[in-house]
Image 1 (cartoon, rainbow, N blue to C red):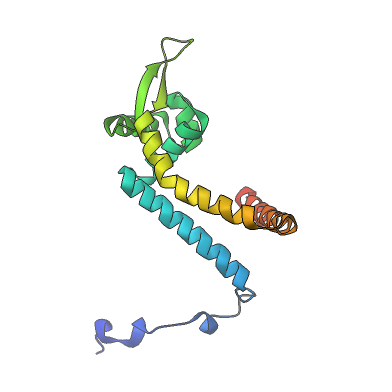
Image 2: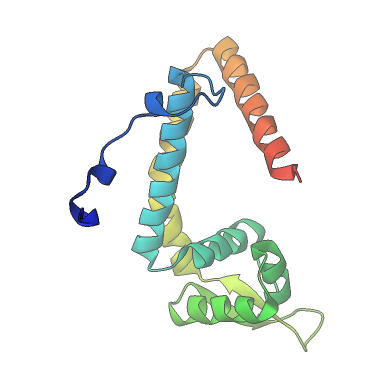
Length: 167
């Protein structure tokens, strides 16, 4: 009898050994896009760690910082979660000092969630090196190169939009 723990079922494999799926070889540009995507996700995880929030809370903070005050219901819609879940997100953000609840300007029965100034400052402090670094790279590029890169990225984004919209 063979002990499954000692069998060779954990042998290494490579993509070359997979059945032909019709997938083209990974081009250097495709690999660079994957690398940028992985680095972007790693940066978001790091930002979440620095701010002591989970991914959902970080996404909520992004909406609040970019779009300004939102009701918990509006936040729920943007996060694609229930209003009860949105309330928990807001509770966590308020407890951590990342957001504040304020009365709605026109409807006193409602509240709006506002990003806390210190939290916005801390977030910007973390984001600024990346934003400025990318801006510097773009500024160094000749206009013709910028147009090529912009067209390429627009086309890549349209491929992703089509994939997201697919049934």
